[in-house]
Length: 436
Ligand code: FES
Ligand SMILES: [Fe+2]
Image (cartoon, rainbow, N blue to C red; front, side, top):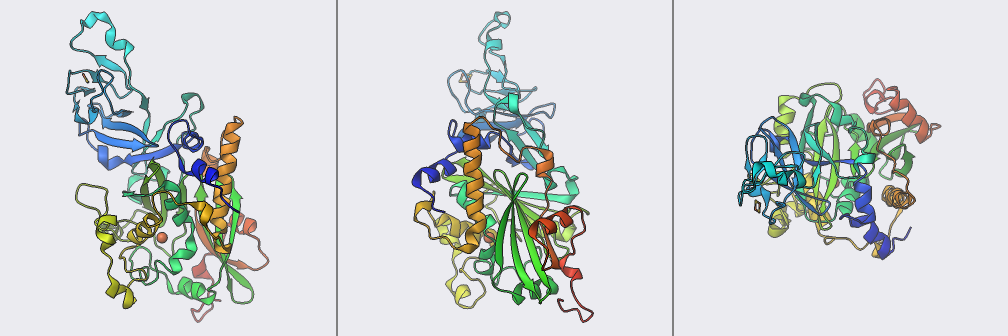
């Protein structure tokens, strides 16, 4: 599949009025972390999403608001506003707005003039789910049901979310997350020691047993199953199935008892995005040790600059490149930590990769299919069709690994896993503890 410059533009531009902008505005998407608006009357937060400048706040009653950043009077940034008495007050002339965007006070005008009733800021809803505040920026008439992603419906103790800013277009960041083969190169030497990503001996042997996996993407109800299939002896296959969910979510399978992982890549503008990284366990609370590791920037979480969402290692300091560590095989790329390795490599492609110049191979099948699914959804939108992946039934997906007889096709393996009956890798070993 060859991507034309026109298709590349359609896939990567998400501002108001663009095709991809309309697609993103068909879903609930992560806007910020719940911890950023923890307190009523706390500091408002600037939020740029899909090239729209907004400000988020939690009012005195705990209600959440996401409104136009700029005051309707003369355009002052409401980030400077006073968040008090159930509203956000512009510091310039005191106009005050509710979480709905409705102006409730214009102090210079007579109270009975009714002037303020005619003034409202653009406003979007915010929902607190899975440690993340989600927004829907589309037509209220076609607002989808609340997000039902695997991690978005769990109790607080079972999920941990972080975010970091990434200085490149959302699609090349997401394509990194769907390109599982890169783990064998870019992240080599880095996963073995990581407390959240370390591989159990059985899985490690299965991975090593077949270094040339087959990549099989297949449509799921709301995205894609992106499977890698390895030979596990003569009789069986070792499957690892990543889930991609429209438009910007992935879930990848854990090893043994590690937490599950997932991401959301949300455009800030066309040349930067938020990478939300989520760890969760569907069946138990995350342990103190796991939470501490996540907080310290292990696994898929990055070490950040104090009070900011910019990583400590970034483009401006060459991601703290360590050539000696690269030579000594402590890291494959010379960059430490998994999310920074991803950021460095993806940002190195430039703000928006020119996909018309690529030379794709079979391990890019998942990415190719993702682009096609997105392009088809754009075409559907043009014809008035709502895109897939908006309903709870389509969002309730989980990544998994399984060892199954070779005769079994991906659809059957997926059906077994959905029924909770797929055989996990740990079980597929003989009495000696070696992989079967
Ligand atoms: S600019 Fe906001 S009140 Fe005047
Ligand atoms: Fe990666």
